[in-house]
Image 1 (cartoon, rainbow, N blue to C red):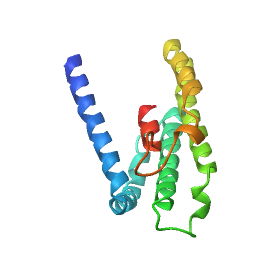
Image 2 (image 1 turned 45 degrees about the horizontal axis):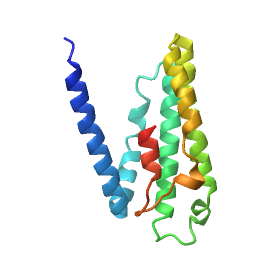
Image 3 (image 1 turned 90 degrees about the vertical axis):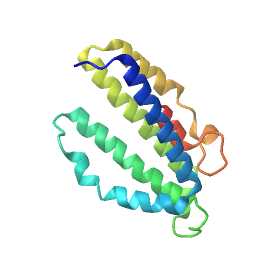
Length: 155
């Protein structure tokens, strides 16, 4: 039984709204975010169920590692960790995440080329070219124009 397109549009709109509100809430409530991240780490074994191809493995790994890395960068920039995670407050973590995001898109692009979906593959290449530069447009903090999570949600 096929669902009409309207149900997809409505459900994706609700999901995007929920995701945006959740990200905004976690930007404001750092303590909640830390506990949520710790609890989410316990679900890690569930993420590796039903991974049967290289593409699923690569996508799962290339999503989990940056999520953990972004979480540590966010925790280090909350103002309570002056000496423990000092190196994560520099610009190199942003460039690492920029490269990981680009690699994630390129993985999907390679998969699209393999199956002959050239329109999606070209779209992936365009996305790689148009990712905003991290030193100019990415920020981790409460009062920013374009946060790192918004960049990841957009792409």
